Image 1 (cartoon, rainbow, N blue to C red):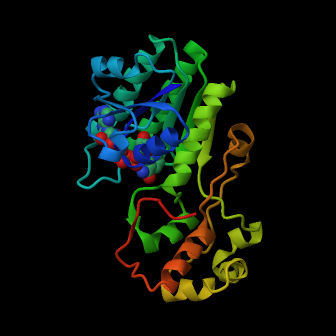
Image 2: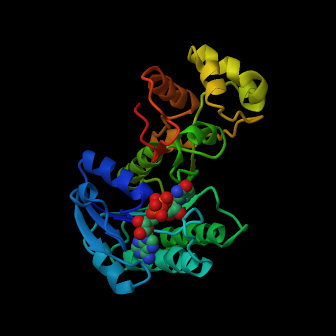
Length: 289
Ligand SMILES: NC(=O)c1ccc[n+]([C@@H]2O[C@H](COP(=O)([O-])OP(=O)(O)OC[C@H]3O[C@@H](n4cnc5c(N)ncnc54)[C@H](O)[C@@H]3O)[C@@H](O)[C@H]2O)c1
């Protein structure tokens, strides 16, 4: 099966491309930027600006399924203008789906966001992106999975654990959810499916609700030494944990996230025991599991 990945040179695109190649998919990688050499070697690279219909036509022709990741978001430095965010995320998505419609209506996985909403231009582009996906599904009957990813923008390692307790998700979990969604749209008749992609800490509800009071002890029970690590590295403990019900994703896609706060602490414990300096470490989302 030949799969088009738009935004293949980006943070998610790199992880998704690697995972799909491992899973045996034939890949067409599309981006305005060139992916790193090891990712480029995983498939056919086509330079494609999703705002240009002829680029999109060349990218879509002949593929069996599409993963649409190409977009600009608010986390870039220097920032991308709202006008460009709107053009790439909305016009680009329209061009892609319109071209898919003219090419047999392949199934689509769409990168939405927990930023979905009306609080800013980027958020609105994800609302419009989901609506365009809905229309594409209605018009073609193709299965479409819309994944509302939580945050996985690269950042300092020591902030990563605390971010998982709030709105963070590991990039590898983003990739495994995307692969599960691809299987869902190509192998099952899932119609139009929408899910949140977040972390699961497997904490009792009471610990979720009163994490600052109960969390450190609960962590210590799961992983001896956890409380000491939290204190030593000054890891911010929120009053409560953000935790979504991910059971629908498990039921429909067979997907569960693998990296929660305890997995982060387990990794930190190993690095601490090895005497490694983690202060300058940046997490693109590749914690050893
Ligand atoms: N990073 C996050 O925290 C996060 C959270 C929720 C949702 N998302 C969504 O996930 C997707 C991937 O995000 P990411 O963090 O990997 O972003 P990223 O910025 O790392 O990658 C986006 C890629 O899209 C490419 N691109 C930009 N404009 C393009 C165009 N006109 N044509 C073709 N390619 C273009 C860029 O070159 C880049 O390689 C996006 O749709 C984003 O909105 C990201």
